[in-house]
Image (cartoon, rainbow, N blue to C red; front, side, top):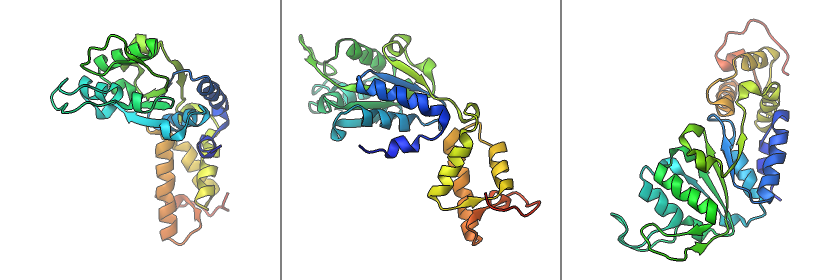
Length: 250
């Protein structure tokens, strides 16, 4: 089993969430991941895919924000018949049919238009697919697991949200001492140490927007600056802060 994604979800506060999504994935229960940008929704979605037991080549990710119209997202998911809308020059199966027996990850579900969300709700209820614009009396039954994510749960239809098991991913500011584990893991990968003063600076100035994603960006920029200075550790100067004293690397 590929443990890379599981190992990338770092911090004691997330242990129970990892156990929960593993159980849900093995039982093929639809999951909606809710959290601010940078809280790790994609990592948890990948973990769901891995723990589902489904074939990796039958797993696919769709970013709903890239489909501003109902028809385009509906076509991407469920397929369409030729001529069902402008630009539909040939029949299309859609990813739900081409990836049956697998896992579909719907990122930014809140960006999907209400019409597309309503059709997804219908699919979660009866597990049958009718191509967009098609008049099919007996739609095809499809077995596929679905995990979705959003940073704005208010944009998800309440009826659709109710069809998912919801998991809330906490922002970094609510994760207590996890930040120390995140910093240590990042520096271990990049083979860098950090002074006590610089560590205190990073923790004290932990990002409120962007969460772990921005924390990693700040650490990455500091690593580049330290490397340019010929240092194998991060100090206050690496973060653009004047050094008040010399500290031993942590």
